[in-house]
Structures are given as structure tokens and as C-alpha cells.
Image (cartoon, rainbow, N blue to C red):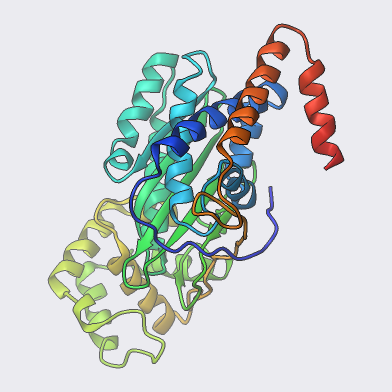
Length: 356
């Protein structure tokens, strides 16, 4: 799936969604989940949620602010709670969330594994490595604080996570989908949403494949030699540098290099999966690849999506609560009747949407 290119503004908004809105968002999300599952199946639902444009449109339709970072965290929360309203027979799982809930993602995945009687260790690994990539392999100044992992019994998965840049007071959303041609270390995202773009160290860009290969060659060297190489280049860093003097903590880097060398990674995915290999270690290895191996990494910011709609703050108009309630009730009626074999209302709803 390839989404259309555009750009999104996500300034940080603090505080919680008002109860009157979130309670409706939960019921609205539950109805949307039921309709898509009924009409198109679980995989299609995940594919749509991982599409930045569709996800943003759903947030706007639910009455949230088009220009707020909260559309990510609040909509994911509404989807998760809306799913819980549908009972245990729904064939999808929504795990994680904001802050503490993000940390609890592995445990929640495991709970669904027990409930469904299936091995979910693969999902736990995907959840962890995708967060690692967006936190360390893409160095854009944003630190993750939200992680939502969605998966099905059939093995499809999607990720919606968000990072914060406190200095710029903006947020950045990263979205993934388990498409058939997915290479997790080469252009893996369905989209990255942010208003601010700039010089970003992007080690999962297509242009960084040579850098990945050079790094893997370098980490085969003895750790002592690796540190000696760094000592030789940290005195003449290029003007477009992505490291500072404080990043050259020789003791820390030697420890990290030794750990990497002992693990003997054969792929870039294995390298970044090693515990302790974070943004500074990857930045140092990238510098070596650029200056010693002459394989410069990509500095292209992958963020590229954007929208403009309205929401709860009254732009372009306040949320009409009565209309919102009627919409939720209509969607629920469509689903309930379709489940009983009466598709008249649901088919009429589909014809109406096609007309628009």
C-alpha cells in the first residue's frame, strides 16, 4: 500500500479530551470497527489505520482537532476502548498506548496470545524493533512516548506511534503495516507525519543501504581497532555533523562495540536489535561509514504527510453533539441489522458514501 504524499502539522496539545467527546469517540470507533470488519475484514481495518491520511480523516470525523498531536493518542485510545465494547470474539487486538501503557505493550500482546491460544513472540519482537528504529535508526529529534500495536489472528499487524520534540513543541507520528513486500530496514513506513522537516539521520532510507553494509563490515573488527578508528576521525568531523564531543564517550562506546562484536550481527536488523545499541552508537557507526568507508547515510527527513479539517476546539465549527449521537446510532443500527441478514440500511449507507 502506498499513500499519497502530503504534509501534516501536529503541534503539542496538553491535557485530556473532554469526557463528553471521548465517550462519543469510543462508541463511534466501535461502530467503525464493526462495519469495516463486517464489510472488508480485519486486514483491511489494519491497512486503513496504518494509512496516515485515512487515520487523520478518522480523527477528524470523530470530532478531534485536525492540527493537534492529541489526535493520535486520543483516537488510538478511543479505538482500543471501542474494541473492548465489542466483546472477546472480535478478531483483532489493540495493545499499548501513551506513556506507561506503551511500556505495557508486550504484556498485553502476551495476554491476547493466551486468550487466542497462539504464539505471539513474533509480534513482541516486531513491536520492539519498530520502536527501536523510530527512536534510534531515525534520528530526527523526536522521542517516542506513544506506541500502539494492532494485530490479527491471521498474523497481520500495524503500528501507530508518536514522538515528541519538547524544544519545538511538536509531535511526529510514525505508522507501519505488515505489507507483503515489507523490508523492516529499508523504507518501512506507510507514512511519517510531522510539520517540521530538516536534516535527519535516516538509517532506514534506501540511500542508507550502503551505510548499513559498511557498518556491518566495521563491527566485525576488533573493538580496540574500532575505537582507534573513531579516535582518528573525531577531531575533524564534517560541517554537517550529527555527533557532538559528548557523544564520544570512549568507555561507553568501547563497551557497546565489544557487545556488538560478541553478538556478530549478520544483518542491520540484527545489529539494531542488540540491547544497548542506541542512537549515539548508531550515529558513531554512521560517521565511520561516511568518513572511512565513504558510504554516507541519508539525511533526508522521511516525514511527508499533512491535512486540514476541524474539531473540538471549534475549527472550522464546534462539534454538533446531537448530530454526532445520531451518526453513532445510525452506524450501530446498520451493523445490527446487517448481522441479522437485513443489509438494506448498510447498503444504503454505502450508496450514499459513493455518491459523495
